Length: 342
Image (cartoon, rainbow, N blue to C red):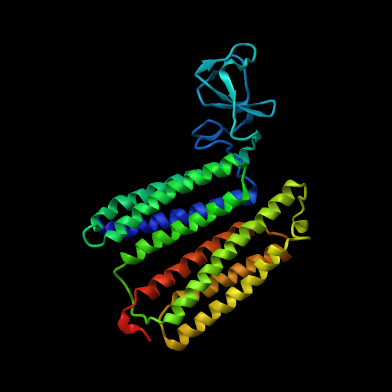
C-alpha cells in the first residue's frame, strides 16, 4: 500500500485546495447562509431546488428534521407526520440557532457543493491516514501527522457549523481560513517526508529564517484580506450594491493590506536573488515570484477595475497556493544535509 500513499496524499491536498476555492466562491456570491442548518441543508441531505419544497401544504408527508419557512421563520418537523387541511404548530418547533430564513436556490447549491467537496476531501484525508499505518515502523511521524490531518478536518467541519450558526461571524470565518491553511501545511509535510526524490540543495540559515518571515507575513496578509472582505460584505448588507463604491472609504486595514503586498514582494525578490547568487537550488522560489505577481495584479484589478467577476476567489486561491509553496520551501531547506550548510 505504501506505493499508493503519495498519490492519495496529493489527491487529498488537491481536494482541500478545491474546498478553499469553493469557499472563496461562496463568499464572493454571498452564499454562506445558502444552507441555514448543518450538516443537512434545510433538513435535506440533497437540498431543495424550489421554494415549494420548503412551504407548508395540506395533506403532505413530512419527515422528522425537515425544514419549512413560514412567516419568515424556520420551522423544523419534530416527527414524521402528515399535515391536515389547516396548519398546526403541534408537530413543529422553531429553529433556534439563528433567525435567518431566506431561500435562494443559487446560494443554496453553491454552499451545498462547498460542503460536498469538504466531505470528499475528508474521505481522502481519512484514506491517507489509514494507508499511513504502513509507515509506522519506518517513520511514525508520517502516521501521526496523517491522523492529525483527519482530526483537523473534523475540527474544520465543526468550525463550518459554528460559522453557519453564528450567521457568518467574521472572526469565525477568519479562523476557518487559517485552519484550512494549517491542514494544507500538514499534508505538505506528509508528502515531503514520503518523497523519495530529493534533488541536491544547499542549506542556508539566513535563507531559512527569511523563508519563515515571509511565510508569517503571508499568513498575516491572508488574515487582513479576510477582514477587508468582511468590510465589503458589510457594505453590501448596508445597501451599497455598486462595486465601484465598496472601497470608496475603506478602513486603515485596507491600506495596510495593500502596502504590505509590496513589502512581501520585495522580501521574496531578495530570496530569489539569494537563491541565484548562492546557487542554493530552490527552484520553487520562481513559482513564488510568479504567483505573487498574479496575486498583486488581481488585487489591483479589484481596486481599480471594480471587482471583475471571479477576481475575489482567484485572489484568495492564489494566496493559499502561495502559502503552500512557501511552506514547502521551508521543508526543503530544513531537510538538506548538515554537510551542505554554507
